[in-house]
Length: 241
Image (cartoon, rainbow, N blue to C red):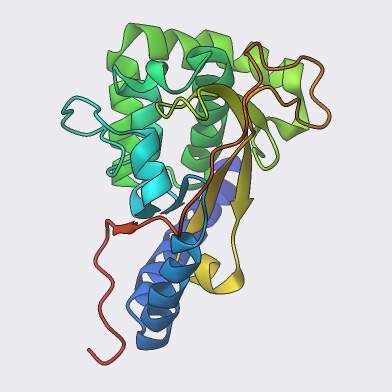
């Protein structure tokens, strides 16, 4: 009976993915996505669209700047897959402070939840194999993650509103924190996409509900002169195509 329930849920998830892929090719959805890139274009914080595999669809230039200069990697570049970036790119720790506890474990919790729903997804299975081949990440997934989930509680998989430490390459931001904001409007959801925004905090500020201040000297927030240039990773054709 348990296997039957799992098979039914897995088939339902597979159908949902197929529906989302069809929706992403619908002309009205494509027009919406092209307009939505203008929204990202106006955001001064790093922002991106990802699918349920964390494949990156669209980024803005604030995101590009945050991860600028990363060394080449076959699968974990900033514009390829955000989960792989966090887990596997050797340069990720220079931007994502307290990488293992503040970034890897939360992402592994989300990955475990996604894999439970999409057990036959080939990309998620590949990532699971890559985790298994990485001694550090495999230990985190097999041993550290269960303890972390028990400590955090039911909110372990929901990252919306989480405050995490970063080291921005722009010294006007520098050593600071960001609040992770996730948004999934109905049209994005139909296309299988979610928006992630890293709302950076000005240096020296203390975000609400955070017990510890950012250990850095105070400095004025950077001035943003004009909207950042959008980088489109996944091709979204013009409306009249």
